[in-house]
Image 1 (cartoon, rainbow, N blue to C red):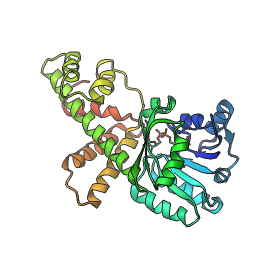
Image 2: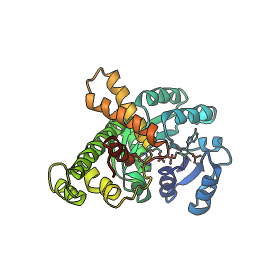
Image 3: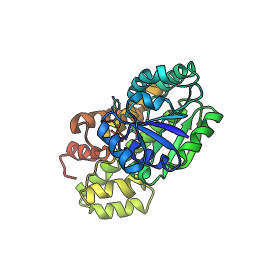
Image 4: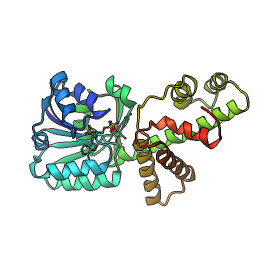
Length: 289
Ligand code: NDP
């Protein structure tokens, strides 16, 4: 199969590498050097121009937001072929995705939203969880391709539902990281050793990915790697909030989480990692992390 892959960022770069094990993958990236390196190192084909990716059975986008995806759709629209499947792996906005899908459908191109979770390590090891929105037939087509990148692939529902559940699950994670940082730093202020506070939390009902994996490395080992940009996480929570508004749903904790993450982004800048929100929690308490 011929796949056009657009967006070789932290996630897209390794995903395109896995796909090249079974398919002819044509890669395009805004910063061309990354695509050149990819084609050299992983036997993919360098797109001479963005338009080259349109001559494919499957087009995959892995970009920051639905806005960039739509810009690419605009540019490729004249060259897309009837029968192509467009898989958008971006953590996008379901409302935008549905409109994009309609535009593509007018050209005979099918669309599935297929955001992923599992972080860069999951993309590197092809162990991502992938949540897909689209018709049952398009789900099957997408799964057949994306199985090379992920371990768990779930059909969520109609177009847009993959994007919806992605931003909701990331919102759960955001709120969990924040409250866990608050309570651990409060324990420290109370004179409890952080390692002890973590040991108790992880042996009890406060346990989560935040307490087991994400926060110990930062708060105890004082390592703050960039694994997922706060800017992306803030975007996901803002999309979740917009969906809540749309449904006239009462989600006060989601609203507060969104406000806290947006404030943190303004404080920390767009190159910060999402777990650095724990630094803001510390600052709000005049304490150290
Ligand atoms: P990166 O910031 O690492 O990469 C973004 C990619 O998009 C780069 O290839 C970049 O090109 C390209 N890009 C940015 N702006 C434009 C534009 N205007 N036109 C064309 N290309 C553009 O992002 P990630 O790979 O981390 O994330 C991608 C998506 O995956 C996001 O939606 C994110 O929320 C989601 N995600 C990320 C995870 C993670 O742990 N990182 C985990 C799960 C989901 P260039 O190289 O030129 O900058």
